[in-house]
Length: 498
Image (cartoon, rainbow, N blue to C red):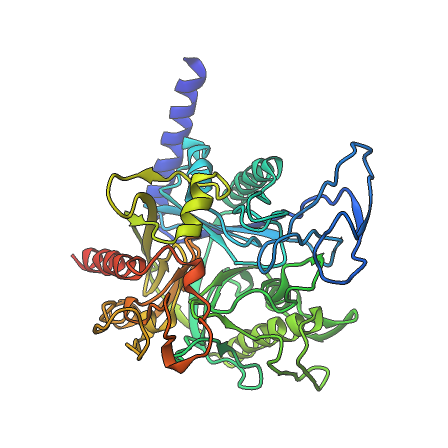
């Protein structure tokens, strides 16, 4: 009883201090979430898949079994062999004197809402957090945190012990960020990308939401506390044969902005300082730079096509370079009174995808489904969120949104399974208030692709006269997901105007 009373007193003092402060304060923190690699293995046939009948492995802890860190994205059976760079969880806490929110961004493929809720449940009340957004960068070069990329389709790749440690790391990062809270000024910019480093849309219609959206927080003396960078690309440029854990594009961007752009320990361009937090933008339709797409690295003056750490470096550093240049060119505009407003909605969806339904029922995907007595038989609760920070907004989307839902350009091509007009209208960006609108995919959940219903194509003939099925539907809950998500985001936006 005494400890509870003391906690309430401390909490009351904190709330009073916040109310009296009446100014924006931010705190950042980052912590490694790189899993330990135990056993070693040799990929004898160079297929980036572990086969115990062909490949060699060393039982380093003598327990008689192959202890793997199964890498997420691409194929099953891809265990890590080494570590290129640390995977990170980056946290920011923002407090305007009345409302306090936290955002965590982690170098993982995706985090299911069940896990997100467990993190929220363990947040101490005295931290005074009104809302927490948990975001996965959609890193294809880190551990499986969803269950889909284990040693086989019917065996999860999730390590429960790692997930428990991941949650503790998230809480620790939030705690440090709260300790680091300090007065801040806010500046923002919409930054074009370098045309020599293009992003490709791998599925028609070709619609790309390709600007960089950046928010900088600085001290009164001008030094940078930290930054939020929102950009839409799959974090996968080292591709499917890579066997080293790496934060890929997101890591190079973060290090480039914060610490400077380095090649072989040589500083090519100074960074801005502070802590950088990456937020993946609209990546549905497969926004990426694929294994045959070329980009130009202006720092080493080379064109890079093949998937590699060098390609990830070139892309990440190019994005960082654009932000750094925009800062020095004075393109960031200040937000005089950045007040916070947060809202979220729980959304019920049907899992209409048979294989995802099966994976959910078998427990391969770590989620809490609800059974229904009529189709779709499996229901699932997810979440959409809307944050206003001065004249900037942050929209939390629980999966990978096709960009045409965000910026327009939805079509109903010949071969689509439904003959209908676009359902997801008006486009989201046209409805968003403020000067800078960040749209964050894989926020608080990882439900897969969010595909316009009029573009849904699960049966032949295939859209746009394609000879084979286009990629997307296999990792989507179903054709009704996009209209429901769109409708609820519009509802949050409308409610915020009241």
